[in-house]
Image (cartoon, rainbow, N blue to C red):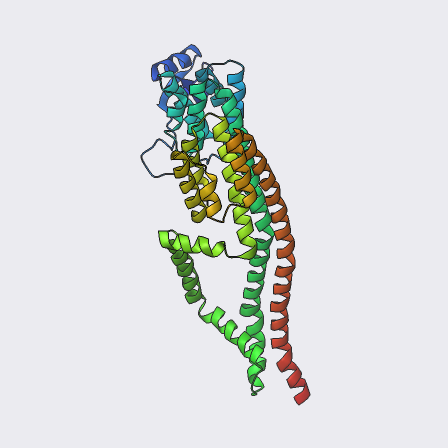
Length: 402
């Protein structure tokens, strides 16, 4: 099915501008004619994912939209509704313009004989490799509605994890932004006004006062240079960590930070186990599953360990050897995976590990927030104290002089 946008006039003479779903342009025209609508113009809508231009989606498709759509599709297929009819129903239900168009195009391709997985693979910005591979496995095993239900649960779990991480970082970011704004106001408004008084004293000023005046002059007279240096530094750093050597060094550095190291390992282990369990339960071959999971692990050193584990499995060995050798996967994790492999219960064991580490991530993020709050308050307090003393010290000298 495709979506056609049209302008027309109804039997009452009222101008209309809307859209209609149909398999072909001729069918769309016939539908409108039967509804008593005189066409002025009609044109098939194409999703921005299909256009050859570099224009991004006009209405971004969020992970929440994708999870909801997947769950609805699973429900419709479970009710024994044909895939094309289910996609047509979702087109009418969706509020997202681009998702609506994409679903219509996918439905049209499936109606023309394409598999659902193949049709979805034409939209990599919306449906990633995990999604497509799981749908393909569901189609081949005849359990598509079950796979889609697992996909929706998996997607929702990823959203929750992302929200936890972003939620834990919200407070520190707000505090840093507020502190930076406060410092800029002090050094560009307050300090310049009292600098004249300090200069009129014609005495050697205390070191804190001289530092404050220097920073104030820098903010007022060289803000443009500071801005350029800041932008160039951020650009150079981001450029550097996209290179192979830069990424390795940066990720190695992160693994040396006391609190950050534990959080990175927990998040990646949870992601590795939950994704691998979901893929294997959906019927995706283990080598393909590990390859997909490898691309989801964010740290390149842990990613390398997963790649070596895949090679071990391909050679008929256990995946736990390379994972344990990397010293990045906890002993308990590798031990439980080994038990799962030997007992033939790998998927349930991976789920247990995933749930355990998801809880640990939650606890760690809460603890990190609790630690950062007093640190940020103390840092801001020290900065304010420094400024206050830099102002008060020469004024005290002035009073004692009088």
